[in-house]
Amino acid sequence: MPAVYPPKYVRHILVTLQSRGHQAFLVGGCTRDMLMGRCPQDWDISTSALPEQVMEIFPDSKPTGLKHGTVTVKINSRSAEVTTFRSEGAYTDHRHPDMVSFVGDLTTDLSRRDFTMNAIAFSPDGLMADPFNGTSDIDNHLIRAVGVPERRFEEDALRMFRAVRFSARLNFEIEKETLEAIKLKAPLAANIAAERIREEMEKILLSRSPEKIFELIELGLLDSYLISRPQLIDDGGSLRKLPKKALNRWTCFSFLLETYGCIESVEDFLSKLKLDNRSIKVCNGAAQMLKDPECPDTPVGWKRLLNKYGVDAVSCAAMCGDALRDGGYQKQLKAVLKSGECFSLKHLAVTGNDLMEIGLRGRELGEMLLFLLDYVMEFPQFNQRDILLSLAQGTEE
Image (cartoon, rainbow, N blue to C red; front, side, top):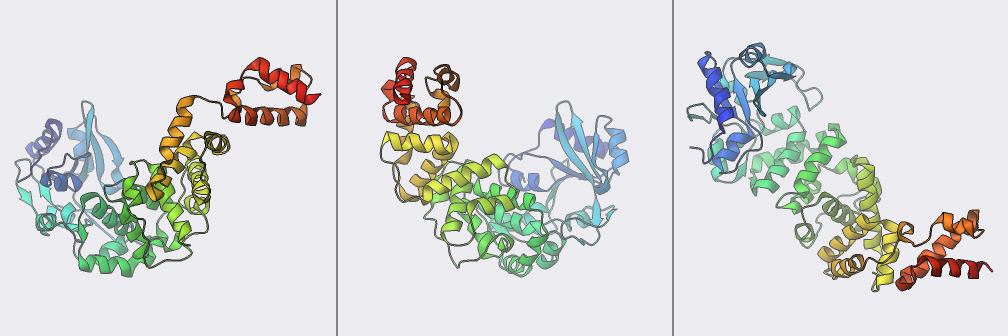
């Protein structure tokens, strides 16, 4: 029996479908989480009702995937996805079925799912259907493909990444035959859009076991993004030491890949994975700082880094540096930021307009602003308008 039960609005959907003569079951990740005592984030329902029938029963529902039989049913402000029992045809692109056929039985519907732990169903009255012994695999902390694993991964190559992600999130082991099938079918990962791979990788990085991301390399799933595949990358537990923030963990992971010669550069790797421009800039800047053997040991040094790379990148580098080398960098950086001392032109007590008023133009104006900024980073007590204008006039003379 489940350790967690669905909320009232989900039970209402199940019971309503059943009262209209249709079968209805909770399926997928929500049943797995319920059995494990976790509160599901999403609720998925499979039913014998056709999409048109579901929409007739629930007038506020929206057709969010009619091609695949999916309707989003809204009850007040809450919603759940309701999908008709179905079987699927061939997967020519190794991601999506070429055709979907609606069927009348639950077992056929469950047989198309990825892993046994996700192929369990609960009826409105709490009866469980488990045709592939998913509960046993949950009890044994195993991730096992439904049916023939090679076939499951040929259908949808992203399932190989999902296996590693579930392993990281749930602390489960991948069952032997399933693992061997991933190694065999790893080349199919080249067919997956970079955005989808990035999403799975980020979920692994933000999991309780982020070091599992290196298994993607060992299994050959990232070969399209690497220039070499080392036998073993020892991160010293650095990823786990970092806060669960995407930029920190992307930086640390990609920096290690560059260090081990797996990628040309952090920027190139993250660009191939289609991270957004800001994230690439921050991670690349942080990695550049981590590559510098001479870390700043004075407030002035930190302020110059802040000016060059920005707060986000320097903060990211400090966190990664502490995780990789335990250098006390965050403490030093925090003291500098807390001081409120100037490290950028926007905090300088004079502006370009002020310097124009004393006759500076063009290149001379720009060079003077940089000179004054460097001056107040070293002597923060002199970041005062009158003092800086006097200094600018005196230097000009």
